[in-house]
Image (cartoon, rainbow, N blue to C red; front, side, top):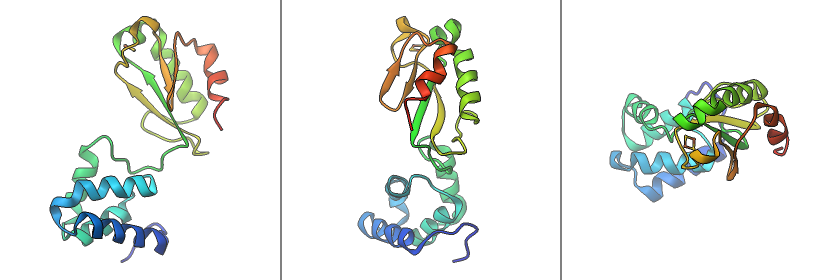
Length: 159
Ligand code: FES
């Protein structure tokens, strides 16, 4: 199979194992994609094509499913996920500015990963901590009443 990215044989053999376990049929598509993403972290186009071949689906079908569901990503993920709340309470209490500073510090936009693969930046609509707005999280850690001046200090804790 011709690919535009170099994917080692080890990855293809893992995909083969997943397909074997989940079933090499079109109805297994979402389960297979989940498992493959868990294994290699994301779903680049060559991987999508490989899965399409393995399940006997047109590549366009796999591409549509990957782009439809927000939990699938075609970009490599950062080692840490930063989520900045943009729900109403957070937004009006400075969440917008916090997001701007996070993006500047990480050097990437929402839905993207920093060049050093350290952070992926996302927004959330409310995490149920509106009384502590503005809120951001890094992996499982929650930071409340975040001021833009604290963003650097927060991010520096994560390698
Ligand atoms: S709006 Fe941010 S926690 Fe609810």
